[in-house]
Image (tube, rainbow, N blue to C red; front, top):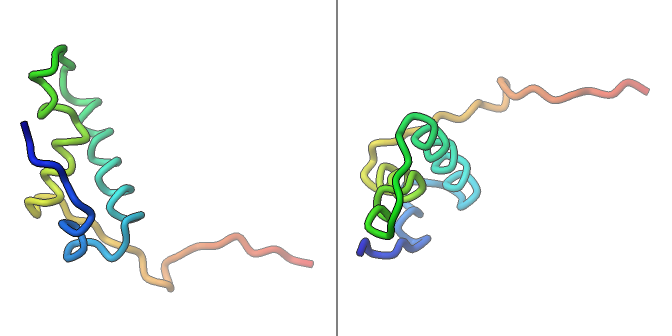
Length: 78
């Protein structure tokens, strides 16, 4: 059985829990779309969410953020 994950494990790699969730869920969706699904409790470690978190912890996954000058916001005219 894999060891449980703690939020403290991610503090050095991510500046917020929100960013961790966004990055790992995007990777989990990618994994789920590209891999066949199985059945049974033995495949718990094969779940896309677990694999994505392992990749994040292992440093295999990186992300980039847009700078303030690159962000686009809708501007409303009065």
